[in-house]
Length: 284
Length: 284
Image 1 (cartoon, rainbow over the protein chains, first blue to last red):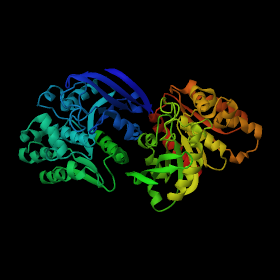
Image 2 (cartoon, rainbow over the protein chains, first blue to last red):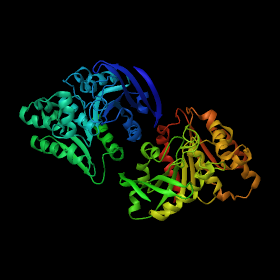
Image 3 (cartoon, each protein chain N blue to C red):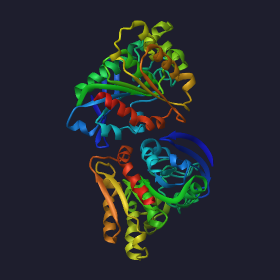
Image 4 (spheres, rainbow over the protein chains, first blue to last red):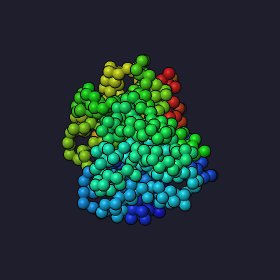
C-alpha cells in the first residue's frame, strides 16, 4: 500500500491509499476515515459503496459524514467503483458501463471477466487489507448510494454474518428489471438472465422464500432512504419491487420515502447521520 | 433572476440563480441556502466568500454547513469568485489572477477596471438583490476562505455597521505582502502600492490607529481559524501580521491555530459549525 494523502478532519484522519489488487488485477485507490478514537483503540468499519461516475472521493468530500463518524468512533472505507488501468473496447465510452460502473459483481464475459471482480474486491480483499493494516475491529457494516446501494444490499444479502448492518440511499433495487442493470448485466454476465439473479437484491430476497436456508437471526434488516423527487426513481431504482419481495419473504425492511429529495449528495448528507447512528448501534 | 436549480437539503432548499449584474457587467451565478425556518419567517444571512479557483458550488458541496444552518435558521449566500464572460488578455491563464480570482476588490487598471468590481458586487448589489427577493432580514454576517477570508475581512472592516459579525478560514491576511496579493493587486490596482492598502485587512487595522474615527462599538471582533499544517501559511496567508496589527490597534481578534489541519475544505468542514454558531449568535 502506498499512502497518497493524509488530511485531518474532525480530529481524525482521512487517508487515501493505492495498492495492487489481486481480485481486479489492477492498481486500486481507496480512502479510509479514521476517527480520533482509532488513535487509542480499534474501531468498527463502515464500507461505503459509491454510485455511477464516482470514485473514492465523492463520499469523502460531499457526504458530510465525518463529524458524526468522529463522534461515534466509526471508521469509513470508500473503495473505487470499478477496476482501473485497462482499456477494453467500449470500457470508457459511457457513464453506466465499464470504468466507474463496476456494479459490485464478478463479471463472466470476456474481457471484463479478467478484471471486473468488484464483488470479490469489496467483500473479501478490501476488508482483509483494511483489517490487517489499520486499527479496526472485524465488525463491519455496509452502505452505499444508487449503484453502490445495490452493491451494499447484495453484499449483505449474499453473506449472512459478514456484516452487522446494511443500509442504502436510493439503491438500484431491482437491476435485472431496469435499463442501467440490463445494460450492465448483459455486458458483464451475458444474455442468460438466470445468471443475473444472484446480483439483484430483489431476486436474492425472493430466493430466500424458496431456499429457507437462512435463519431469521441472520437476516439483516434493510434500511433504505429514497428521495421522492429522485429523477431515477421510477425507471431505474424501483424500491417498491424490493419492498414487495421483502414483504412476501418476511424479510425486515424499512424504506423511508423522503418528500422533495433528489438523487444527489445533498440528499445523502441530509440523512447520513441517521445511517451512521444505525450502523454504530449495530456494530456495538 | 433565473432559477438554475432547487435542491432540498436538511429540510431547506439550496437554490442557484443567475442574473445580470450591474456592478460587474456580466451574468453572475450565486447560490442561496434557505433553511426550513424561511418558509414561515425571515431569517438572517451569512455571506460566504470562496477562494481561488472556486465558484458558488465549492462551499455548498464540501463544507457540510447546511445541517447546522438548518438548525440555527440561517440563510447562506455564496457568490462566484470573479466576473465571468469576458476574455481579457491573460484573464484565464493562471489560477491566481483573472477568472475565479477577483480578490473582492474594485479594479482600477484597464481592462479589469471595466468589470472586476467584486467588492461592489458583494457588499452592495448582492445583499440588495437577496434582501429584495428572498425571505431574509437585513441582518448580515460574512465569512470566507483564503482569498475569500481576505474578502470577508476587508468587507467587514471597510463597512462598520454593515455586518453583525465576521470570520475567516485561513485568510490571505496581509495581501500587500505576499505573492498572491502582489500579483493580483499589481494587475488590478497598478504599481502604486499606496492604493493597495485599502484592500488589505492588516493595513486597514493599522489605519484604525491613525484615524481613530471608529467607535469601539463598531469594531467587529475578527474570528479566524488557521490550520497549522496549511501549505500556504508562511508564504501567502500571514495571519501573524494581522494579529500583530490588531494587538497594536486594540482591535479584538481571536486567531485559533488548529494543529494538523491543512488548507482544504476538510479543515473548513471541521470548524464550520462553530463559525455558524458564532454568526448566529451575533445575528440574534
